[in-house]
Figure 1 (spheres, rainbow, N blue to C red):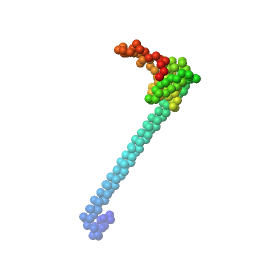
Figure 2: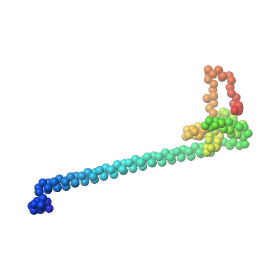
Figure 3: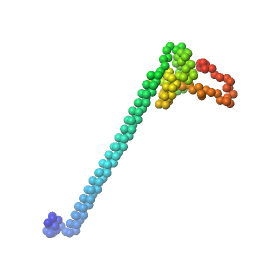
Figure 4: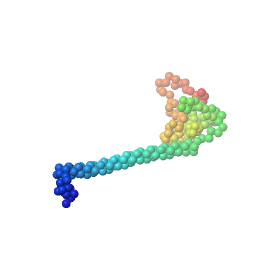
Length: 174
């Protein structure tokens, strides 16, 4: 015999009180299950959020490592293929981000720059002369490193150009 039956028999509680107590007990048990389910849902949501943060962090790290690898490739291409400027006596002027800059080169290097065989690349605030083919490889990786690359095909005059007969000399210094 249960405690509830004994209390009813003794007359200490009524049937109405017993039913109410059973209902309350049932509701409490049901609410306890719901609380457990909410806790499981919260834990699952937190795990999903943590997984998403980890995925984003890994993607950022991967992008950073790819960027560093690309910069290392550019540095290696420029340093390995840089032309020696020797003791240049000719000043070669060019524009670097809107600023006129001057480097001293030999006559052969100047002609190579004019003809588009050589290019100027900027690495660590220093200018390097590299072959045009190497400059194109560097430009594929990061075009902002190449400061000057003359393209002779772009210098071809238009058919309708009224000044086509008046060519600017290549050795004109400005």
